[in-house]
Length: 158
Figure 1: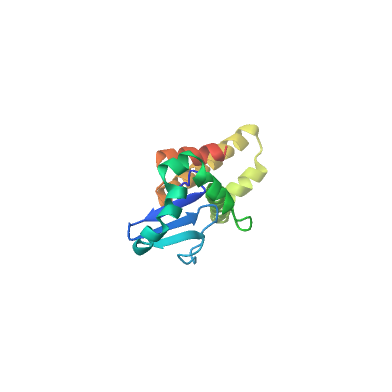
Figure 2 (figure 1 turned 120 degrees about the vertical axis):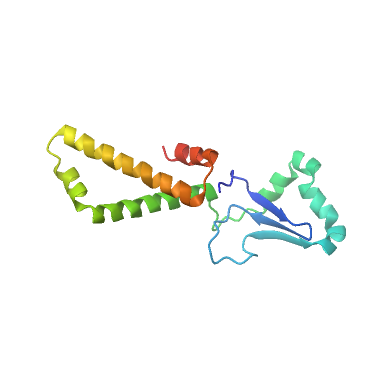
């Protein structure tokens, strides 16, 4: 789920090889070619092997060719770190869910606004914090995040 902030992804089933720009935020309606930088089929491998090896071989990666290629292919318009985009999306869900909860439980909202004592306000704040944690857990479960991914999200939102 989390991109590890890599600029490019290489996908292959050995019959086809595609290189995608991971800095382009995907949408549900994207075609397979969206953000694809390179595409080869196995008949192309022999003719294009030098191009492939120059960028993607172990030696080329260690020499910095992969990073240089990624930088040269960087598109300024429409790029956004996927992790950042994901965190923004989670935050929008939290706001949406909080609004929904407030609409379904107007007494809680009214009590918070009209809390008479510090103790009552603190109690309500604890209830809201517990609801926030519950929302987070539902989102993590919905997206099947691993413990490592949850840790990354929680560190980024603190």
